Amino acid sequence: MTKSPRFPQTGLSADAVAEALRAHAGLDSASVETIGFARRFFAGADVAAVAADAAGLFAHAGRVSSYPGLPQPPGMGQIQRELQQWALELLDAPEGTAARLTSGGTESVILALRACLKTAFPGKPSPAGTPPEIVAAWSAHPCIDKAAELLGARLVRVPVGVGHVADPAAMAAAITPATRMLYVSFPSYAYGLADDVAAFADLALEHGLWLHVDACMSGFLAPFQRMNGEAIPFCGPGIPGVSSLSADFHKHGYSAKGASALLLAEEAARAIDFVYSDHPLPTMATETLAGTAPGAALASAWAVMRYLGAEGYCKLAARLSAARQAFAAAVRSVPGFSVLGEPLFSLMVVTSSRHDMAAVHRGMAARGWFTLAVASPPGLHLNIGALDAPLAERFAADLSEVVRDAA
Ligand SMILES: *Cc1c(COP(=O)(O)O)cnc(C)c1O
Image (cartoon, rainbow, N blue to C red):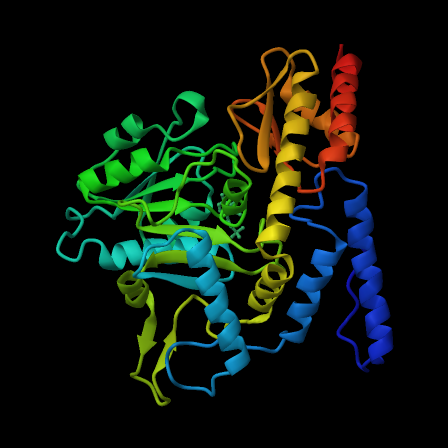
């Protein structure tokens, strides 16, 4: 990186700006082309172009709020309503469920915790001096830690159980009078493995707790895997005991970055709307964290969904599953390596009882594989894309080479 120049005194022509931007974009895509797994959530150049064009067209669009105030753009309003409708339908939401459109999984989870704290226990304050508590597995995405820190709650992380998924007995044992929320993942970002949502839904009902299902990764993948006939359990708000669910359009919905959905009961959704009147201007009301809420990423999500339809998503889901199976087979073909648990989606952890995985991680990085190092159990975290099946053979070959070099 060169040192940034001072703020420019004069402007450039639009052509010159476009050329400079293309150069920056070219640097990014060139680095991405040469790194395995770096093209995260890439579903093809055509899909990427549809996503980008829509975002560009709506670059200046603000989202519509259900509260009166500024003039409401009817086109953006239509896009939002359809996206909400599609999210509710794809995630099997029962009547009375609302979808809030947010900037990403983290925002969806922050709002879920806000809904939990505001609505679930109006008459049940935490014991004196104790912040409200959330029980989550060690494998939960840190966005719940961020939410807890922001909203003054305390996150209690519990070791995962057999199969590296959330352990209902251990999580039940961590429930105290201050507990308000159980947080489970479908799948966890860390291990790519799905927690048993139905078991936790029963636990939540039994203890009168809010259950959040983090389906950020699979929200817009699992429905199409099911349509393809894959045996993927249900995880949505249709299961009694599930209070909220987060699903990201910008993961396997393949939209531009900045789009997610939070599903929760309509009443709970209204309870987290921020409405404020004691100031000089008309009532300020927002449904999500942003003030000026950008519409571009939502237009992008709408465009990709309209472009692909169920048929397009089903084809991509089938290709992703083929890629996952190809990688699992490739990993198992190299002596000493195994796949953690039974990954059903796009994430997979490679482990070994024999090899030093920190060294394997370094060796694979040197060969151009972008993986995260998993601390426990030591492993490589793979984020497999829909078009990645052709990479599996080279992955296996590089894995063999790395351990041969280390020997
Ligand atoms: C991506 C992801 C998140 C966080 O979402 P952001 O969009 O990065 O804020 C949370 N949980 C899981 C399982 C995820 O995959």
